[in-house]
Each structure stands twice: as C-alpha cells, then as structure tokens.
Image (cartoon, rainbow, N blue to C red):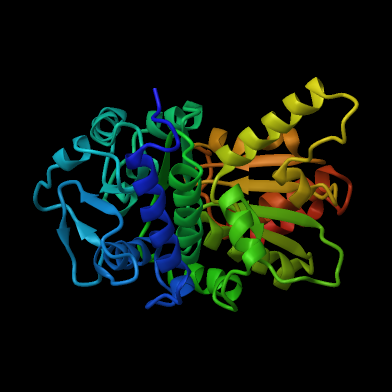
Length: 368
C-alpha cells in the first residue's frame, strides 16, 4: 500500500530527488567518459551526500564498506542499513557487493525493494561471469519491479541515476534499479578501442535519454552503408568496439557500434509495445525503443553481454534480420577477433560476402 501523493514522506522524497537531480545536472568534477563506472559512481555518491548542491538529500548506504581515496568503495568493515527502516523521506543509494542471489535478497530486505542498488561484485576475483552466480542476473531479468542495468561508462551511470531518481522518487513509481558497476579495465587495447567512441564528446541530451531506455549509438555517422550492427553492455562495449575496428581495418566492412546498458529494459519495452498494439488495433502503433534504433536496416545484429547469452538474447525477437546473442557462457572466448569472425559468418550466411572470408579470418587471427 503506497501513501497518497500528498503525504509528507513522499513530498519530502520528491523534493530531495529534485535536489539530487539538480546536483547531477551540474558539470561533474571528473571527466565521466574517461573514468570507470565504479570510480564515477563513488564520486557522485560523495557529491550527493556531502556537496552543498544536494544538501545531504540522499541516503547513501555502504554495505560492508570503507571509503577509498578515489571515492570508490571497498569491503573491509560492516555498515548497518538500519536507518532504512525509519522513514522514506530521502532517495536511497545502496552500494553493495552481492555475489549470490541469497546475498542480494538480504540487500533487498534492507532496502525494502526500493531505491538504487549498485553492485561492484564484478571487481572481485570470481569463477562466475561478472562476479555473480548465473542465477542472479536471470532472476533480476524476471523481476518486473526491478530495472537492471550494466553501464559501460561513468556518463551512462549518471544518465541511469538521473532516470532512476526521476522514475522512483519524482514520479513515485514502485520498485528499484540495479546497476552492475565495473572498475578500470586491465585490457589497455580494449580501453583504446572504447575510447575511440567513448571520449570524443559528452553524451548529448538525446543519448542520455536513450541510454536510460536501454541503448544508444556510440559510433559516429558513416557515409558508408552499414553492413553489421554490434551491441555491447558494460565492459563488452570495449570488446565490440575492438571488433568494429578489425572489421573496418582488415575487411573494409562498416559496422555500427551500440551501447546497450539494459537488454532487459529493451525487451520489456518491446513486449509492452506489442501488447498495447494488440489491444488498440485502430490506434497508431507504438514503436519500441529497440526498433526505433535498429529497424532502419536488415543488417545482422550481434548483441554481446558479460552475463549468459540469454540476457542479450532477450531482444532477438524484436530485431530485423539475422540476430546473434553472445555471452560469457559461449564455447568461444568473447574477444574482438572472435566477434569479428562471428560478424563475417553472419554476413556470409546472408550471402553478403564469400564464405572464404570466414576461413581467412580464422587463420589471420590464429583462432583455428
């Protein structure tokens, strides 16, 4: 049961969220497209909690955390979340590291399944993809009160935080946002490939809005016809950017690169559009965001995630042309050369180039 819109706690939360949004709209202290999501989020959390613009307008809970010199967080001590049980007058930013579904369930009990939950489990050594048990991302994708994101850059984190504050506390919609947060990538080559697209300019207002809806184009406009579309979430954006570079330099094949912070949001939006169109056959059809982005071409789409491929596969039914989902559970390594070969094979299967190109690429990249 939710309080009425005029209740003091909800009014206070709305006012606090507006203060946070104003603070996030100010020029950031860090160049957000050049720092990791983890570092950027730490800086934003500190600014929102202690900066004069927000005036302590958000409740920041660090679960088993101590502050690091670069404003990120480390697990070294326990910090209780008990204040969450005393009022809802402020937005909640919960910084944690749940590696299992059981651990996440404990976080959600503390948070009352409300607020912005940020996990940096990916930054820890683990035998699981992205540092969490496979059941966790699959469960999140199935929870309709949760909106899961896997941002690639600090600017994407800011765009998603702003959307979460607007949705949860200004519009007073129920549920919570979940952000998987990674740190600097140890692969310098991959970083350089991502930088080609990521640091050329800040996100435009349109890209900021599109990022919070699940995807936006990061490759610059190209006069050459697009031959293939490559989509990546989180750290995989750098990998697909590397594959696009190989396709262009080695095979003269133009590839679009798209950042997809949330395949789940894209799929849910597409499902909702289909259901609305079914119920309103005489109305102007609604077009899902994924279709607005990709319907202008039937070129193959390769969607890549650091989780299991079923996470990226959620959008497959809403994409024109050949669709391939690639995830951490693939038999091959998720690398730029393998993705380039995957793109060549998709084009060959469509009859767009000779199959020999795939054989040449396998030998060229020493993948046989």
